Length: 179
Image 1 (spheres, one colour):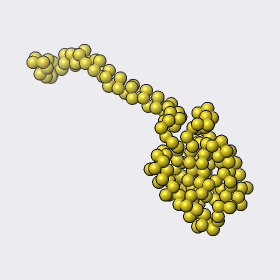
Image 2 (cartoon, rainbow, N blue to C red; image 1 turned 120 degrees about the horizontal axis):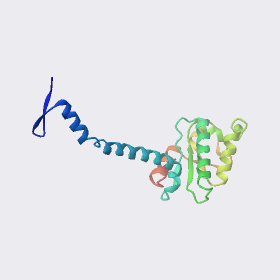
Image 3 (cartoon, one colour; image 1 turned 180 degrees about the vertical axis):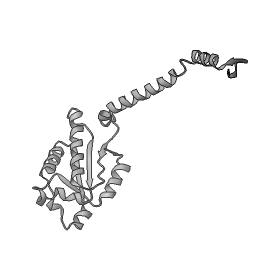
Image 4 (cartoon, helix red, strand yellow; image 1 turned 90 degrees about the vertical axis):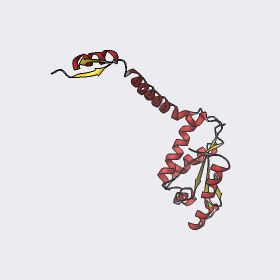
């Protein structure tokens, strides 16, 4: 049984229609394929540029680390990321500073009494602070809650009256971007 369709004002059998369409539209998928290929290349290129994206943006006055889980492991990961950023960009002293504003239980990392427990984190933070890669500040409100004072902190750790207000100031007034 020959199925016929109206195609360009003439009736063609189905087999002829298939051949005609295949011949006519064999390259019709090229624009779609080219678009997918271009998108794939863009994603690969963007992935390669993620490492240098922080250094390329010269208009940024500084970066702010977002600590959400409030645990020592998260702080340590952020410090290692800051160190890698410093190394990847040629240990350039002109790089924007990376601010840490801690206002949760992770503040205890920087108490002198806890050095033995958090030695690796404190040593890394002290080294990066000495190189002016990071600027670490803790919330005095949290210190009062933990019944501690600024004398119990290391010399490279500063303090702010209220951590969330300092984060807001850095992002809105100073125009820091999240690291």
